[in-house]
View 1: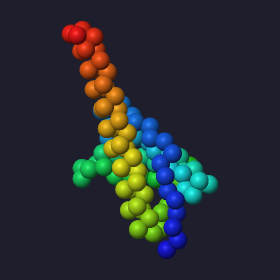
View 2 (view 1 turned 30 degrees about the vertical axis):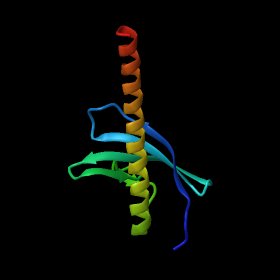
View 3 (view 1 turned 180 degrees about the horizontal axis):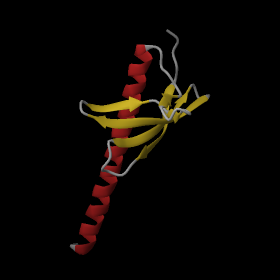
Length: 107
């Protein structure tokens, strides 16, 4: 199986309150950018959905299909790990801001 360098190019976190929690863009071999992978909170946890477009019949169709289960699992792992890292970063930034505000109020 050929190796691909798959990296997360961007993670776009969405506001709380929806099953759709983020959009992710992937960069493959520093040559192909796949925009709009979706991370969804399902009944069994997070899962990754490929970018979709709506057809003339008003049904949604995947724009990208991963035909190899190993690559699909690898992409899912990379995308969900990047999402969790981003969420941890956001949480740490919020904690830092709260601590700075607390230090300012009560030196």
